[in-house]
Image (tube, rainbow, N blue to C red; front, side, top):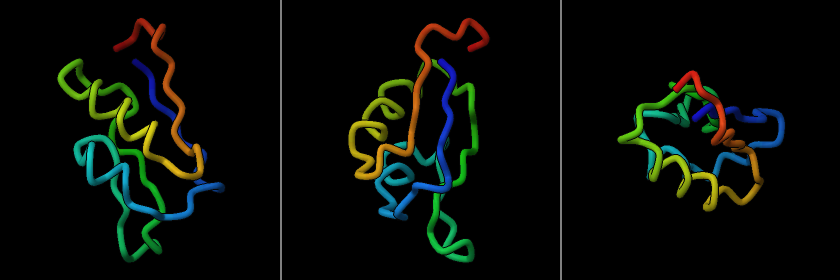
Length: 70
């Protein structure tokens, strides 16, 4: 799994870091906007990443399920 984020469209809802805190952060010192912590998360995080993608109101998160580097 390969994860990317479009930081320029993030609205800082914080949903991603609530459900997948090992992959996403929303640092208050950066206005709460998304920071990607792990672009190739381990399989143990995949369900949380998928949930974060579905909960993102701005569609900031993109997942490439076919990426073989994970």
